[in-house]
Image 1 (tube, helix red, strand yellow):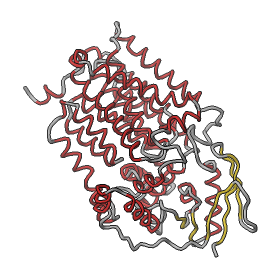
Image 2 (image 1 turned 120 degrees about the vertical axis):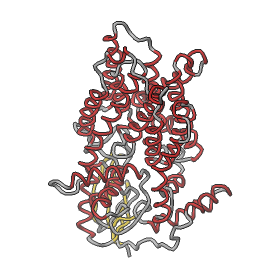
Image 3 (image 1 turned 90 degrees about the horizontal axis):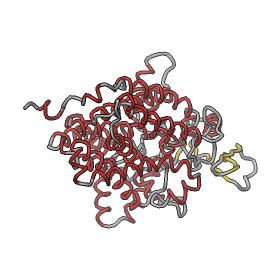
Image 4 (image 1 turned 60 degrees about the vertical axis):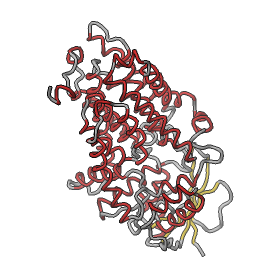
Length: 508
């Protein structure tokens, strides 16, 4: 029997009668992605502008850093930066020049199309309507941990995990290896999810997937280690030193932080994940698992990997940033939607098979609208938001700061992404100035245990530890108290923190 007969059986007849082909699903996904980006494009969070700053410098100067004068290694997701840079560069060949936000718009459309197309292909492989792709797309985009962090790696994670599931269910080891490598290049720690799906998916076992994944992911790590002094981004050091927001950490953040922002948005994120957990428990029953030999392993692997991610980040003791919850909620959510499609009885006639997933999509879309609250259209801030100033305020302030400081160096106030992007000046903190990051590396290494210290020493073996921070002539500060006399000030009014003042003063 040929490899094709073993690994690529024809779709069940019941699936082939569905009009929701992968191509149709991808078109729907592209349209929905365009709509979502129009909704959120003015509400991109501060860390999204860190990514866009990297993208602009890569396209304009072939330079890896947040600001033009300084090389850095604070982009958590190399693949997100590189893929956005590729799209932005292609767009720059036409009129308008280098426009990273437009590149992000196109990438958002593409990722949503891929997510929906892969979801439809997986559903049809399971003998279910491709309309389940609409349900999964809506569930992912309604998740406030996702839609509040567009511009970061959240959509590549969701799309590539869906593609990985398709490759595992369809028995495509080559595609699985490629997607696994891209996931690791998106975030190194996604290797936990990839490994769980691989180990529990017999149809893609063997040496090919790991070899292909290594060929995709390792070259960047080698280049980064040699040229940037670290195989992993500096954000590992930055975020693990932060620990949390007071007593709010990743481990308890769902309750101590995000629950305080409203039960409904949190439920929209967590209910699909709970459904995924229920699917995994059901498929773990031997009698049930034997009924679905191709799908049980990949779906359970998503849940195991997502929970392993949550456990690892809880042990690391990092802050409860909203995008840190995306791998777990999305991985379990994919299992919940596609596993629900698998475990629900296929209706007769099959034309009715689109009713349930379309209903789920409509419900998720309605909840998305409800959780948007009283925000204007397009949004002025995302559902989950924690900055000192609204994105529009930061954009306006950044442009004015750039005009005031010129070529001087200015210290960032603690939030740097939007200011750096719009001021186009030398604004420094540990995300933009490697000299500051070097000091943090020393602090993190000193407090590490023997094993972690050895790993950190190996990773940072080529780091230039003599790199000194730039000397600033100005500093930006945000306060809710008294402001020094004679400084330039800007009022801010963020719903997350209340009214405050950002001011610019000379140093010395």
